[in-house]
Image (cartoon, rainbow, N blue to C red; front, side, top):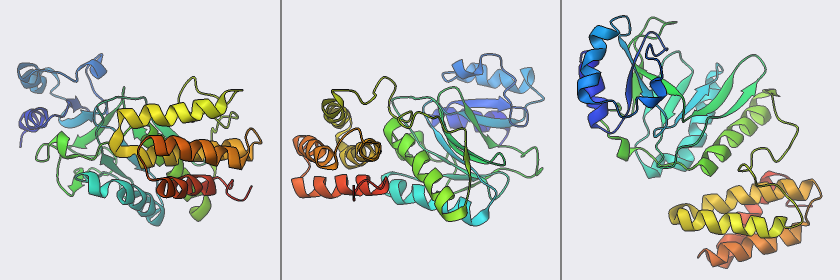
Length: 287
């Protein structure tokens, strides 16, 4: 395919393509080009003749970017994602400079980039609103083409990708960071001192923290009924941090979480297992 044919194919499949010079878009204000028309895309070959590579705006198609140079560690982080999302849709894996890799997902409720950085400059991140992923063309460092495994975007439609919410994205990045620190001795950098900084903006423990936690679960469960388990697990991890910090007791956390989960429609025994699993991850299960 020519770059123009590739970009038109991506657009027809629900993606938002961009011309790239290496990895950089030459278009000013490119984050606003998610709805570029066919006619505009056809002009890019002449207007940006020095930009033969093609990227995808990640506002509606977040990309889990595993920017890790340890082969086994990168594969383990990929496996972590597959364990959660493999059954939800097509997993499209892009490799530019191996063992680094990226996987495309989709969302109908865009969110900002989420990342975890490590000493030495490596990181894992969810490229999201305001970012783009180099998808086709020649990698500027390796001078070899980007390659896809499991299918290529364009031939595979956006709607076939696994869906992800902001809550799940935050959990995925945190789980990947925990795996790298625990199993491969990575040293995390730039972690905010506020241990609750990964919670949704505006939600902090206070004198109504139990009610807030229950409200969080109910709100998300109503908005995304098919993802109740993962939402409750995420909230349980946050509650575990509160238990460890001494903000609430373990029994209080379990009670409010299980009750809220039951009101969301989960069987009480299943909810109890999910809650304890989340608490265990933070070390709060034995508190």
